[in-house]
Length: 189
Image (cartoon, rainbow, N blue to C red; front, side, top):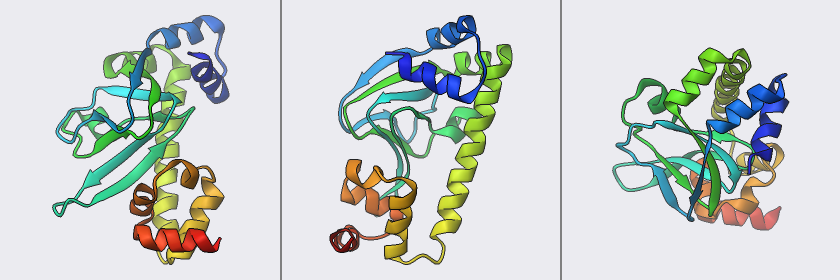
């Protein structure tokens, strides 16, 4: 159950086996069902999730009840409601497993303890923050000025498995287009 997490850690930093085992011991397994909310809108997020199997979606719902997907994490990725995790205020967004998922969960206290105790884990955290920032910037600036077709081509190029794993409704909300527009474009590609 920890082999993917170990591979992820080793891909991010040089680490000895003892420290690797110690990090893994801080993560606890959690099985979820499809469409399970793991962080609710008013929750204060106190965990980080490593996806062993499945997919997590980060989304909001506007006052009209329309969902807007902000981020998707798949196998071998870490995910959390980061602003809430950092500042310990309500999430104001939802974290949901959209597939039956196997997660490895680390508490906020253990996460920050590892950041303080192990420089290698601190380096991983720095990379997580940098990657999150870069991904958000690429999506924001990449989508500005893109028409619907260009957005779909961008997602196919940068996340080829995305459209195969995520429903049209969720994918469309992530891309900022209607589900019918997405279906029409997909049929032409």
